[in-house]
Length: 82
Image (cartoon, rainbow, N blue to C red; front, side):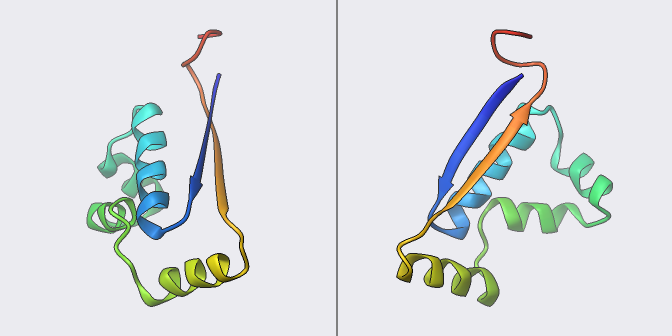
């Protein structure tokens, strides 16, 4: 099982990280959307980092406080143990 780590300093960076993990897990946007009960367009918006007021403000607060968001995921079926 491979481990994936990304540091996101913007909604766009977090979206890219989520898209990379989704792809590494072999899921399409449609499959992820169906599992979550949301539209594929919503997944597209998340992965492209479409800023909304909430996400933009959260990242502003994190930057102001000198923080960062770290995203960690385990990707089954990849890496040296696969």
